[in-house]
Image (tube, rainbow, N blue to C red; front, side, top):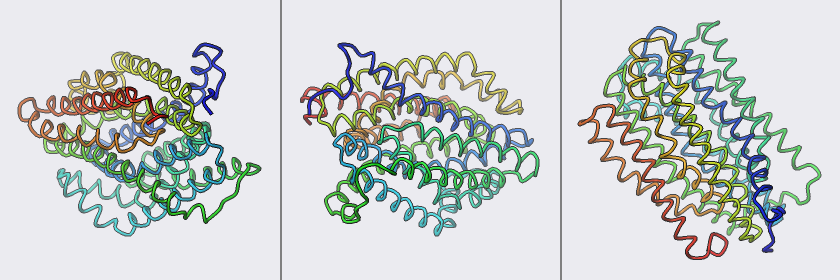
Length: 449
């Protein structure tokens, strides 16, 4: 089983095509995520008061933290599914999906049942002004009811990617985010529901996506070899591996989330205008993450499949080709931010003070793609090969250095110091993960390790 899965004909040409076949649907669909955030920002940014912009930004951050902390449902499911796919284990393909959906349902139920405690703790920790907190709570207590659908959609997307099927993910995300955008405009601008309308638009869109995703899953499984075996779903060894992988990812993801919570909290304490300006620029950071993640998702699928098939040539090709394209995407993103950054800021808000603040700190966002692309790509490689402990340790190390930097630098440089600290977080992640990647290669590569 050491033969390449794809005929390279002595060159990487077919690998470039295969990488883009998987990555392009993800990149196109991922664009809808920052587009949705931009529409949310633009809709409330034109309501005439910066507190609404800060409220939706903080509310969205809370859900990003909740859902991002459950991102192991996507990442762990992708790696385990891709390895089962590479090993032609069709029963395990079904079992991985069911395990992920069961856990998604349990986690969502806990979130809904404890929503009052979560809301109180989150808004107290961030410490925004009374006006921002009041409006943010309205958004939060509306959107929380979409948690069961949102987490199930995350699990299904991970399974689709592991199955080497990224077009269903594109369909799912376009349906969810496209409908969300339309409902945003209707609920806020037509029905005048304010920030509550933004929250309920997301809830309706998430449940619509759940219906679409379930239909796609059924279509992919009908006629495929294998069966759903509950004995396999509940097998102790498989569950232990599933839990181990996802626990590492959960810890890593919580560290990422808490870093961004700290960033937002420190910005909130600088005043509503600084918080609003950073909220505008955070759309650029989200765009960067989701743009490069499209290629990283492809790397997850292909490295996981190569590991399942025990193919060292395929592993090497997937890493080489994926890394090249992540760097290219990062350069294109830098150019895009330079050319379109001022235009996008003007489009996201009509508040003169917020525009001025966002323009002042825009250079930090312009340099972010170069600082971040290597870490984001290796996230994909480590996930596909289930090197989750290494990924966890790298993030914990990076966060341990980020926290003192974020607490100290703003005292010296103001909001510039806060953006410098965030840039350093990405740089440290890139360097530490790069060192781990090099060490794995020195020991014979991911298949041997």
